[in-house]
Length: 173
Image 1 (cartoon, one colour):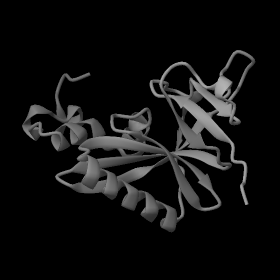
Image 2: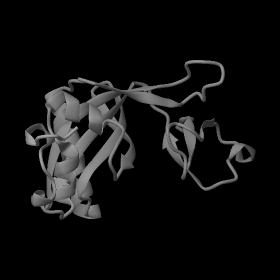
Image 3: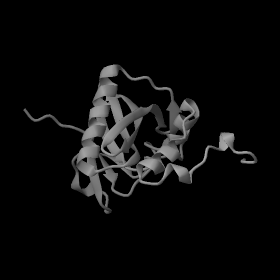
Image 4: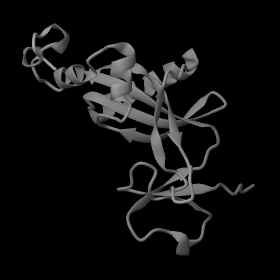
């Protein structure tokens, strides 16, 4: 039996929730620019942050994404930021770590990268891979008191001697 599934069309070059629209199967409603489809899922929007170095993957943590329409001029899927401190069930965190390992193994990711997903009933549905420094890195640097940008640069092949810890440097601002 055919089940009608709602999809979202998303512009390939869209970011921050811009360029997303519900698609109900009409060819006339497709964007003119390059796009791809995401199956629409209910649940909460979460971002996970990882650090990859020499084939190893560290799951740093997750944040709740603050997105959606907040005013009449805001796009319906607009991203507004992240909230640190989202604790996930160990099974969900384990699944995310496995996804991160697969991505690093197949794509050769290095340094910091993020996964955006929708958590529906304990299942993380992957929405997007962000192979870059993400909007939540500073939150984790603050919450964990860890210099993630230095860890990112080291994972990408820069020498640790290139960086210094500003807490111990006289006169550093």
